[in-house]
Image 1 (tube, rainbow, N blue to C red):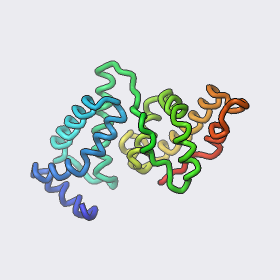
Image 2: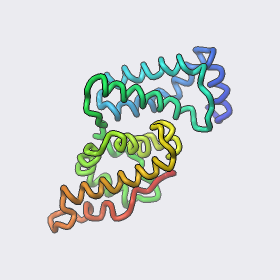
Image 3: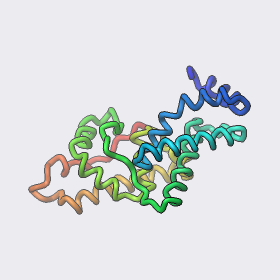
Image 4: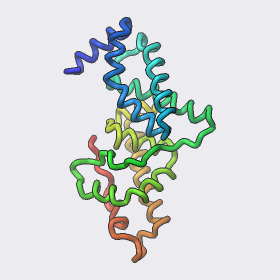
Amino acid sequence: MSSPIDEKVLIERAKEDKDAFGQLYELYVDRIYNYVYYRTGNVADAEDLTAKIFVRAMKHIPRYQDKGVPFSAWLYRIAHNLVANWHRDNSRRQMVALDDITHWHVGDESPEFATQLLEDKSLLLDAIRRLPTDRQELLILKFVERLSNAEIGDIMGRSEGAIKSLYHRTLLSLRDDLRERHGTDSVSTPSRTRSLFRRPFSSRR
């Protein structure tokens, strides 16, 4: 839509008009699918869950209320819950599909760090996969979906301050993991790995 006002009008129409909801679907289906795929790592499951997410959204949109966060956060919240249920019902270990880390948006203001991230792709992927699920999801929402801390908090059911704290702890965990497993003090360790977490990730928010 051309402006937030247009989207608000469309949302109100979608509460009674399926065609209007279809326009919202077209606006957000790619983003929601992308998020679900990163959380499941499987195309078929991501497609199935994405369809279910929008069916649920269409069912509940008459009760949708604007609480000051983007409509997308409401959709991500539905997706968050359905993916969590999917993992639980299938007794799956929750993990993310991170093979194409080149699409992560670490921060335009830190090109040197972004380069290090790409160069240490395999080490970082292993470290990220060892993180608890909520921390993996936080990184996806921040670096793939490029959401604000407030939006992420709304999706994950936490305060903005709690998200900032979790983000900081996540970076420390990644740094400590790489140091412990790859011996950042070792002469044999590539210099780019030793300097990887010299300063924190740059945030776009």
